[in-house]
Length: 133
Image (cartoon, rainbow, N blue to C red; front, top):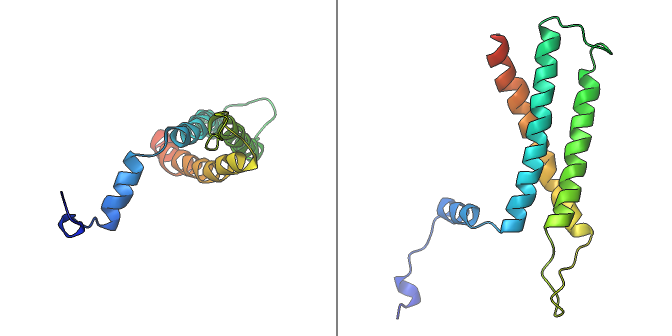
């Protein structure tokens, strides 16, 4: 039997890597759901932006600001709702999982950086690669 002195103390990076690898499945599903929604809408925005930059005449004119506003709203709402549905709290004695506003709040707070990071990748990395600027 090992004594506490024989265990190796893990460094902070190793601890975080272990937590990342062993993340709870419902939380991973919730974050991936927000990421998928943000990626699909980000690619749609990229296509619209590139078309406008190349001189395409689209109905409605230049609606990029409206598109980004709708993008943020849809990603936040989708992240909140999907997380509310997918991430239950620990079950009670009856075995039925409970859901409340905290599940939705987790989705909202996870969707905010995802929406931002996807848009940064689309606008700052992919757009210049496609347009060659």
